[in-house]
Structures are given as C-alpha cells and as structure tokens.
Length: 426
Image (cartoon, rainbow, N blue to C red; front, side, top):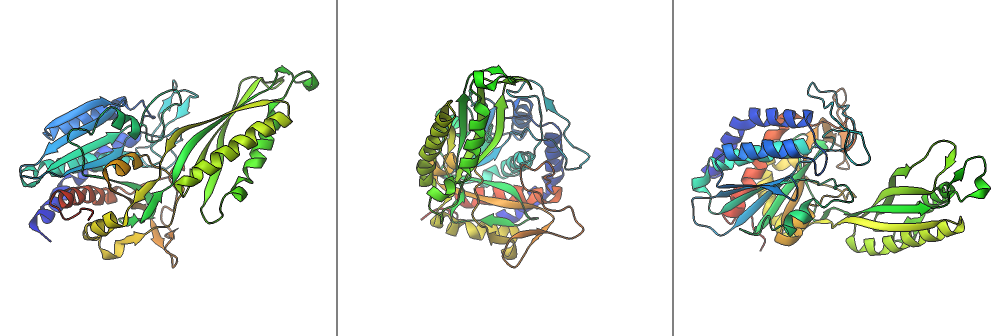
C-alpha cells in the first residue's frame, strides 16, 4: 500500500474522537429537511477551520460545499457527498445523546425529530474526511468537493430542495466533478462495505391523492358524500397493483399518512392520502403511476367522490455501472478488508444522490454499523446478546461509533484514488 494511504489512515485515526463527538452532537440536535440551519452552521465552521480553499453556503436552502484544491497538477475532481437532514421520527435508540427535539412549526407537525436514518453519521464522517484530506492537500493531484446536501428525505411539498436543487443552482459547476461518491449506513455488520452493480437503490416518487366529497354531519351521511369509504377502497385496490406489473421486477406502493380536517361527528369535505411508489427498475414507474391514477379516480367516482392524483419529488434510481465498480472494489477492499466487502441484494430504498451519480458518474455503496452478522444467504442477522438489528427509519435505529473512522477512511481513500487515476471508469 503506498505511503499516502498509510498517512490517510493515520490521520483518520487522529480525528476519530472528534468525528464521534460531532456525530453525537448532530444526533442530539437533529433538524428536518430544509430546516438544517444549525447543522449547516456547524459544517461551515468546521470546513473553515480545516482551511479549505472555499466554503460555499446557503445552497438549495442550507446546503454547504467545501472546495479543497490539491497541490499537485491534476484535472480530476471528486465530489464526496453526505446528506444532513433528519426525520420526523421519535428517538428510541437508548443512547445518552438521545434527541428530545420536537419541531413545533414544521408543516403537518409538530413532529419529534431524530437521525433515525444515520445522516448524523454521514455528516460527521465527511467532516472528518475534510480534515484528513486538507492535511495532505500538497499531495493531492486534483480537487475535492465536500458536498453536504440538505433535504435528502424530501422537503415539504410546497418547497424546493435536495440534490436536484443543488444542481439547478450550479453548486458543482465550477469545478465540475469527474466522479461523485457517497455511502449510506445500514444494519449490515460493523465495518462491512456493501455494494451492488446496477441499481443500488430504486426509483421513487411521492404520491398525493386528494379525495373530495361533501361535508355533512355524521348523523346524516346520506345528505353528503363521504370520502372515507373511497379512501378505504383505494387502499384495498393498491394492494393489487403489483399484479399489473411484471412480477420479476419488484414495485411497491405504500400509503404512509392519511390527512383529514374535522372532528369525530363530521364527515369531512376532503381527505388526502400521502404515500410513495418504489420501483426496482426505473421504467416501471411509468407503468405504476397511470395505473394508480386510474384506480384512484375511478374508485372515487364509484363512491360519488372526485380524486386528484399528484406525483411529486421523483427521484431516479441510484445506478452503479460495472466499470466504476470494477475500479472501486480494490479501494473498498483496502479500506475494509477483503472479507468485509460483500455484494448486497436489491432494495426499494431511495436516495437522491442518484442526481449526482447520474450526472457525473461514480459510485454509491453502504457501510454496516450494527451488531449483526451475515447468514449463509448473505443477509444480516442480529448477533445474540448484542443490540439487535433495526432498519433505517425505525425509532430504534442505532449506529456504532467505532465504525465511523472506517467511513472517514473510505472517503479519503476514494478521493485520493480517483484524483491519482487509480479509481476511474474505463
């Protein structure tokens, strides 16, 4: 292993304690999508203290981009990305730095807020990588962009935000990346890097179905039009949509929130269903959406209601090309060890890092952070007597602090290997 990799590892070890402290602070003080004011300030202050060449703030709301220009000649530019927003989920992971934040003002709230998806880890690890790489700037043959992205979980529907908005505002135009890279913490075994050639994550969109009837007192339903039975029938019909799409490519339509305005003895005028469509193969989105629209509008009509169906916040699949993965696997194995780099199965999770990877090329992988082990089928299972296995977005989701240094090393090694011409797509 070249001396530069040894130095990167040593510097990562030196900042490991700071990264843990940053992660714990972020975990205890989470902020929802498009509200990441204090998180962005913490990031900006850290990047400035790391003596980067440039720190850009206020991008797509509260996005931050740090620019580090290397001291060696080189035209390559690597964008390292972390998402910084939290979720409207209670924190039940049982750590001393548990979040007790409640956002009273967020649309649809108030909401308890927590980093139940691990974005606190992503942010802290990239902050640590900025310090590490700034320490070897004179040895870097190119430029590193540290991209801290807001609103990965999706902004409120009447606001813009996320990766697409960062690109629309030209956040990465100068200099333009020749590779984008990021990773997501998961319940895989601690320190394992998971990868998938093809779609690492699926395509997604937000669904809003607004049903309109006629408001009336609950004692005289025949004098109005109740949208509630139509909602129930739509929910039942959604469970059969999968039969209209190829069974060999998974899709799912989930309604996660039902919104009504009224009280127990009033049949309301409107009712809104909020949900998500996920497709393992991106072109299936064009099949599912019209079928869902047909189901909703015709079912509503059968109950004398009307339905308006909106598809919002579409996110393309995260796609890893074979050539990029072939180039990246030696780096991953150097960081984690040959026995800790493993292919993963398909998932219907989504991540709008796809906007960066699709535009510039690159890779997106996963990093295991829980007390689990792989079974004979290569699936994570909890280690008996340890903390268990909890998926992202579960209130009990947790991440191991000692694994964070692996993420710092992963960012640093990928950055140097790309700039030096080792990790490139041929």
